[in-house]
Image (cartoon, rainbow, N blue to C red):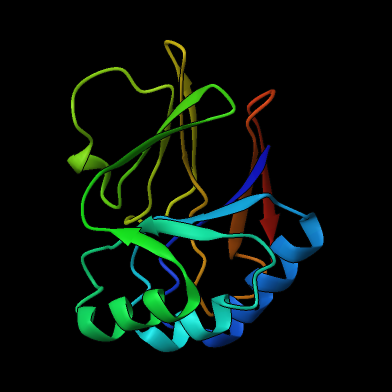
Length: 158
């Protein structure tokens, strides 16, 4: 299974449209957003994804009524705080801010918040943040593609 990983889109609709193109072209099975969508207009653009979208809300997702309504309209599944699940026999934990990571075993940690690319493999755990997704400097933005079979991480820069 291949999943797309997106973070901190901050309502940069031009970048979000490019993210949709990249992830659809990569034929990911699912997409995880690690928070800071900011406005429901971003979810309107993300509705163009060919894969299901789920994630966590971030500290800048203050328009929760509108975000919740858009999630409901498009069938997106977002939660507040920590999200844990198992896909392809891999235990995955998703948080917005890595400081909110709960104690305990985590095989894969996906986060955002600091806009810095993190690909860290330590003691059997992969920690991944695609980094800047919403910046205005071309070539410095990225989304991630994670293969759960071999834990290969690809950064698609744009």
